[in-house]
Amino acid sequence: MGPGTRAQGAPAGGNVVPPPLLTSLLAPDAGDRADALTVAGRSLSREELLGAAGAVASRIAGAASVAVRAEATPETVVAVVGGLLAGVPVVPLPPDAGPAERDHILRDSGAELVLGEDVPVDTAERGSWSGPEADPEATAFVLYTSGTTGAPKGALIPRGAVAAGLDGLAEAWRWTAEDTLVHGLPLFHVHGLVLGVLGALRTGCRLVHTGRPTPEAYAAAGGSLYFGVPTVWSRVVRDHAAARALAGARLLVSGSAALPAPVFRDLEALTGQRPVERYGMTETLITVSTRADGERRQGSVGVPIRGVRTRVVATGEEGGIGELEVAGPTLFSGYLGRPEATAASYTADGFFRTGDIAALDEDGSHRIVGRASTDLIKSGGYRVGAGEVENALLDHPAVSEAAVVGLPHEDLGQEIVAYVVADGVSERALIDFVAGHLSVHKRPRRIRFLDALPRNAMGKPQKKLLPPL
Ligand code: MLC
Ligand code: AMP
Image 1 (cartoon, rainbow, N blue to C red):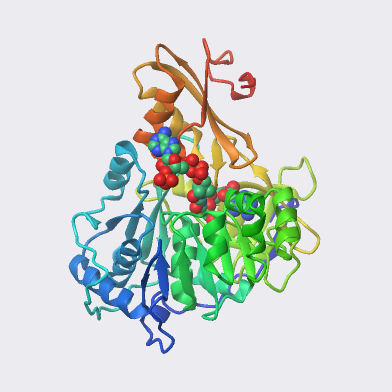
Image 2: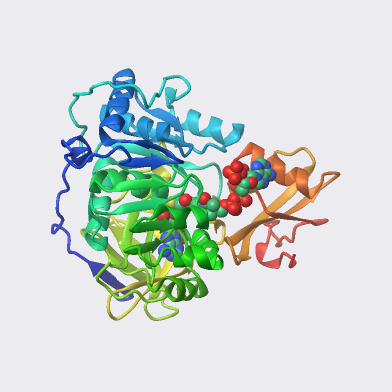
């Protein structure tokens, strides 16, 4: 470790080996209830979920991987659990993915079947599955995530990483079967799917997925534990009645992007409690969190969860601030079919380079202060690569040049804005083109037409020199 490096977390070897991923799901559940799991208004008991998922598992056993069109429905949960039962890696497809994004994910992952399309998924079915549990090293999910350039990469998430990550969070948040978890996040990312569905199944708590993460739906759900991205919390605090309805909850958790200071403050004022912030990535799952029994400080994302080690590799410019690197049992096992990208993401001693700039406080808590690259945009909690959107724009016949940036935005954190050189096409048409080609949440919200992009002497676009909107 170099002189500019400060580290936190358990030493190597001190890790607890988590029980297999499906142990608690398969255990007889005396506390089963008809509404153990409610998604967008439709409920299933755990027994019903297991029966329907068992039928799926029997149909797909032996497949190399399966895709799931991850709409917020009970069928998506049944399909995902079916894949996990059968030990077949699950590839969630964003339901709003346009043909380019969907084709890329299906082709790149090699998913043989799309559950719900090629294989029936029926919540009323009852199958029994008795196959052995797959190894902790086996892939649970292939999660597609954007880099700064090119098409999204498939992050291979091992079953053991999911188990370790969820157990670490359960410990940090005192998350138990007594809780009712409420959220309305999409089911194709770590936040909504891994934490928000498998977390409930693993801890045995009741889950209410609200379909959409609206303030009214959160207020009506009567949960003890709430998950949201900052955009969701910012909308909650604008609706005072909805925010006050959450006063009785045990824990309000924010993550996936930085929670703005005014939203933190308003949540405390309206609900009487400070939110818990946690930090993570697709590639690492959640690694750092404020604890239920710890101090909740605005701007702090807390301390490493059990088994995780972090270090801040200082750039030498400012004391104690630098790139955050993480190691531990929650890490992915690589990008599918991209050994160079995988190798580049790790240090020689096995830490993952997050690309986030963090500061470590004296008490060991972490603050995320920025990103190393401005070409990774976080909008509404979604990670969107500037290059991916630029390529989509360039696929439009009227567009000859494109530069995409994330500009500060009160509601979304960052707003995707495109500067384009184009001939005879409207802003609306270009926005709809990207929404239909990639996915709706990757669309630029605004477009500025230029005669030429600012470039340096080498001809490389200079995003810093783009004019204000
Ligand atoms: C709008 N719509 C269009 C459109 N424009 N449809 C087609 N073409 C167009 N041009 C439609 C949308 O389909 C949608 O329909 C509706 O308009 C609203 O879309 P939106 O405006 O994009 O939604 P918005 O209000 O901006 O969404 C905010 C949000 C969302 C917070 C709900 O951003 C969100 O769900 N974010 C969560 C992201 C997340 O989970 N990230 C976690 C990553 S994991 P309809 O019918 O759907 O309403 C991670 C690790 C970690 O980061 O640390 O957790
Ligand atoms: P994704 O891969 O979509 O999960 O996005 C991961 C990125 O989200 C991280 O690299 C961070 O930039 C950002 N992120 C997640 N949680 C937080 C948080 N609590 N505060 C600030 N940024 C966060």
